Amino acid sequence: MKTIGVLTSGGDAPGMNAAVRAVTRTAKHAGLEVIGIERGYEGLINGQFIRLGVHSVSDMMQRGGTFLKTARSERFRTEEGLEEAMVSIERAGIDGIVAIGGDGTFRGAAELADRGLKVAGIPATIDNDMGYTDRTIGFDTAVHTAVEAVGKLRDTSASHERVTVVEVMGRKSGDIALYTAVSCGAEMVLIPERPVTLESLCRQIQADREVGRTHSIIVNAEGSGYDSAKLASDLRELTGSDHRSVILGYIQRGGSPVPSDRILAGVLGSRAVKGLMEGKTGAYGIRDGKVRECGIREALEETKPFEEELYGLISGLSLRGEK
Ligand code: F6P
Picture 1: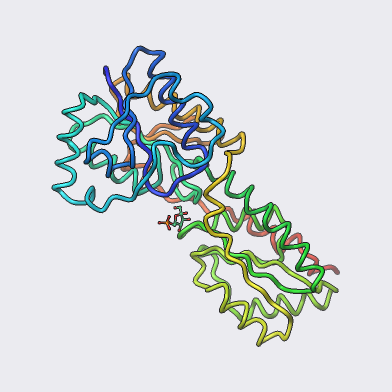
Picture 2: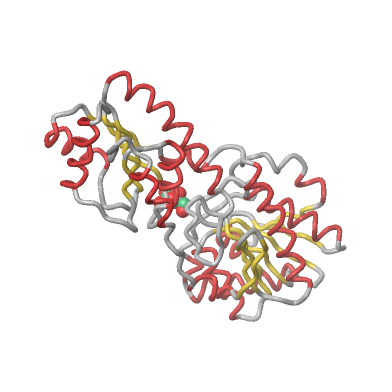
């Protein structure tokens, strides 16, 4: 292994820059050449490469986004695109690639591995939706951002005695919603993993009123099946109380990574390079506080156990249910 490439792909996540820094510095310290591949797999096909040295990644760790840029490449999903990517790789003399991103990135990495390239996958997505790892880089920062926002919404909801539906990201995963809801003491959470009926929501709002709660926060995961604006207007109609809805959106993807995301990026970035130097192809994640290594397809297939205990805290710690 003489030259490694590094790319970030899919939706950006806070901590991607810290991961690129860790990959670059670990590789340079081991005497390898490092090529930064811009715009993910799209840039790989186009040969958009930049040389990275130890100074190229100075002051990067604290920056949100990804300085390598990112993209969701349609071309890379085609046989022709993959072939073009392999030609670019050969031309640049790249012996192995560290791919930083979510499940789409890992699927791309598996395709490259099938064509004989050594690849190391690092999980980076705010969604925390990869079953083989307890955490993905960017998740903790996204939750931190959402918690701050909900805190502010709580102030105004309480003043106006309103119910506020706050929509968070996460695609098909309810993790951002669940962690945000527990951290904010939200009265209700709507997540794809545990569907809740409109009737049951109305009953809970009613029960809140009966115990003297005149305002509530409902954290709605984007994959729950509920449109936040429609839900707020349905609840207004059905319960008669004042409702508002807010979509937090892309602010959850930006910002300086929190320490846990920086640390995870450092640990996994460094291990990924070491794995490539040992001639391995694999995915690197974290399980019970330790680095976990497995196959890339294995990483894609594993499903995430649902955190029932955490979910139970939403109603378990609410005002409702006092005897
Ligand atoms: O995967 C990260 C994520 O932010 C999801 O939570 C969201 O559904 C999606 O990306 C949005 O993607 P795009 O940037 O293409 O709008």
